[in-house]
Amino acid sequence: MGMWRTGIIVVGVSAVLAGAVAARQGAAPARIIVADAKTTNHLNLYVAQERGLFRKHGLDVAIVEARDPALARDLVISGQADVFWSCPSVAVSAIANGAPLKIIAQVKAPCSSLLVVPKGSPIKSYKDLNGKRIAGSSPACEAVIAYEKKARETGARFVLEKLAGGQAIAALDAGKVDGAILEDPHLAIAEIKGYRVVLRDAPQKFPCRTINVRTAYLKENPDALKRLVAAIREANSFINKAPASRQVAEIALKYTGAPQQAITRAARRFTFSDRINEKGLNTLGEELASLREIRENPKDNLYAPAFKGITWGRVH
Image (cartoon, rainbow, N blue to C red; front, side):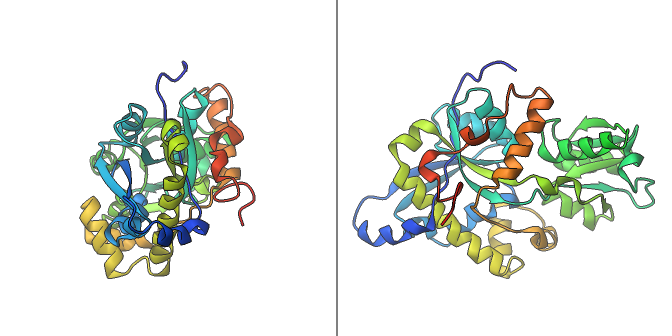
């Protein structure tokens, strides 16, 4: 792939700075524009907004909807937004290919995208994937990478049909694919329709979602970004305490429009944390390099030095 032409940054923050809120009372709130491709995987963003946690930490956060993570990334790169939540492969690939970005915090871990197949499917092992048509969002998706790697280890290869979400489920319904690698809420929707999850272990080594920021914004506003992460940390605690609660479900419904039943079913997979999974992202970087999606694994260059000891490195 060629050098990246535009910039992305990822930023994370520590709850240690939450006490600074009181000292900032009366000051104008810091403005942060978040480009967001709506999904239940970004629930901590919505909870922080709805419960006033950003305001509590002296922030004025505006959420601008994007069609998909790539568009959210591009809005940040172009300076139309400051921060975006995304699949880690989006951030890792961009940074590795020259984008001025940094990852400041994790969102969820491990990756919760899973393979679903129709009832009665012969797919019961990774070897059974050989020659099968499997829907997935992209060859660079961490879950797709995980399933392809597991299949290769048994000598099997499947055909990836580039479909995600509702299109993948429609292809399953029509019998056009043998399985689909889905994330919530579409994973939960597929389960409700009667499809069954198989081979759950493949994506476990990868984390799910990161918070990313433009480096220029990071350089100028490190304190605001740290307060952003502090607010997210509070939202994580709220969600993790009762992920299937009515309050959490109502916020998820408001922002994503996902069916209530799907939100409740997906809740058991909600495990939010701001602590960056360095081992998992390093493994993902190695896999992306081996696939030639990137030239080399960026390793620690992924992360903002300002957040070392807060969300990555030795965290206190």
